[in-house]
Length: 270
Image 1 (cartoon, rainbow, N blue to C red):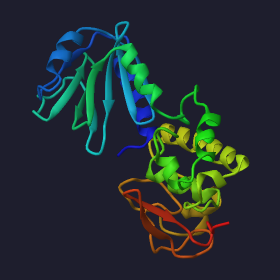
Image 2 (cartoon, rainbow, N blue to C red):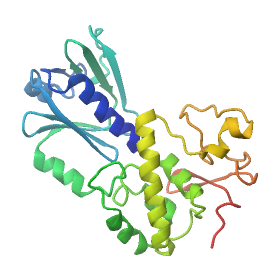
Image 3 (cartoon, rainbow, N blue to C red):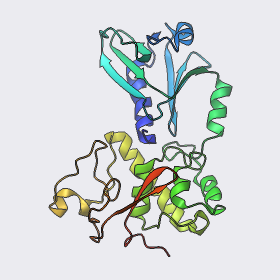
Image 4 (cartoon, rainbow, N blue to C red):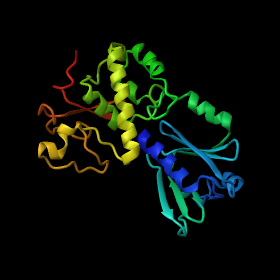
């Protein structure tokens, strides 16, 4: 499932290609046809992301709400658009560009009030200027749940996925199994500040890189990481490989149906 930086990047990419232009909206698959018929010819007026939710605004109060889920894919291309396949849930097209959406968990036309309801159930998003890290920490410090699980809870922090969760905890030497209530205010401030920086960099570069300059392949004389997720990381998907910092084998375990990665030496329990 894409992490929050990907969704914010998609919001920018949709805006760059379609903002302010009359847009042909279709649903070759047919599952969004009625809504597409209401929107076609309207201008895309704004785009927005919150966590893993993407919003495309048309007219004053019409919003397409998209959640890619595990299988959703977005493909941009130049005009003229090729004939669509019947797997395309939503196509936007104008004289310069087209974009196809396939396989999303959610693709629906909603009102402004319904959009606000989505925001209300989501936690603080490190990529949004209106994020409230204090509210997120208020939930963390009351919880006996592990900090690793809390960072993945979209009601607490919106947009953080498995990669950012594993990497930010490593970067701050926090045991992923530590209960949220044992995370200090200083530790939370450092984690949040780092997430903001790392995720903004992810939007700019359209990939996740988390290693510090002294641990890059060039600095360490090691081969670059080869992975379909891209980017240089410390622990994510590096089970049994040596830690870049201490050399200990990275461990992995199942936590809340997701793979957790950490260094047992650098992230010792307190």
